[in-house]
Image (cartoon, rainbow, N blue to C red; front, side, top):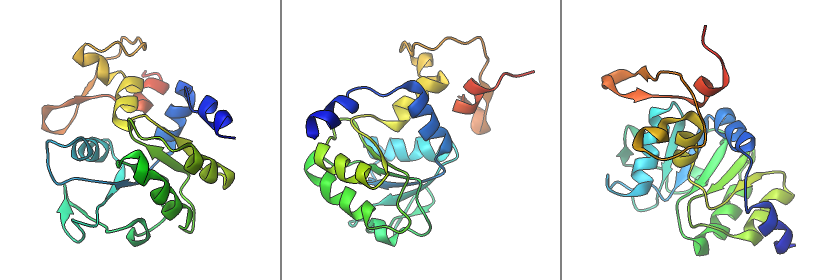
Length: 185
């Protein structure tokens, strides 16, 4: 069973990742940090800047505000249904977090495990309940790659476009996944 899971999760089609990121609105980021130098803080900020409703989850920061969002102590404390649970903890902790996510009603549509995080048995449990699982990927990197933003830093995103980025609030350029899908007139 885990060999099948390992093979299925070795690669993900761009179209599948794009559909997840495009269809996701509410995210719980488990393992959020208040330290602006930590990757989980950077990803939290990036997803918020892209319009996602992100709830940071960290029992050590419960009740505090991170980037204007109230920190929950656990997934069960997050208000409203979740489209995605992003696990920003190590692989040893992932199984318990997946089980906590599977106890939610309604179930999240997606469980996303951050770079370096993988738990094939937990993925099998989630998939058995109809939840899509992504492992060992970063939604910030995938969003940046699929929108073309990551190319601004010199990274080859394998996506070509002649579209100009739109200047957003604060003078920051950004592209969205929607910008990649729909032609401009």
